[in-house]
Amino acid sequence: MQTDWWVVVCDGARARIFSADMLPAPLREIEDLIDASGRLAFREIDDDRAGRAFDSFGGGRHAMAEPTEPHDKRRAQFARRIAERVESARRAHDFAHLAIVAPPDLLGDLRTALPPASRALCGFELARELTALGSRDIEQHLRRALERPAG
Image (cartoon, rainbow, N blue to C red; front, side):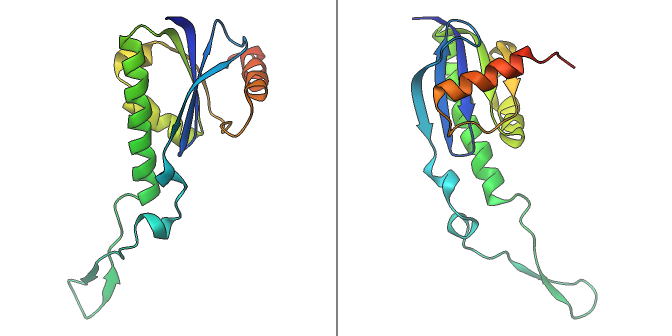
């Protein structure tokens, strides 16, 4: 059954998917994706210490930095999972338009992870963390954001 809008409200550990006939019409929650690893502390995600290296010159020794922080990797993996779910629904014609509400770093990861066909349906983005709010409060945030002039 196709709805006009899918509204994905997410953070690094949770993605709530709502349907709506129009924005900012009442939201109906249809799915809740959870990534339990997104709530882990840094030490719980990657308890291996970085390797050590000797300076090429002299007797100094230092820790080698990880190229990407574990939280960044987990967030990007979760963004791919969300994007796969959205793409699956797009292929099934479950929605005509997409709205995404996410913190700025996750919003960037989602833009990268979404296939072009799904990204083309994205008619609204809001860089905010709203997953803990109730649907009525999310609707109010959407309404305020839609009322603001573009620019």
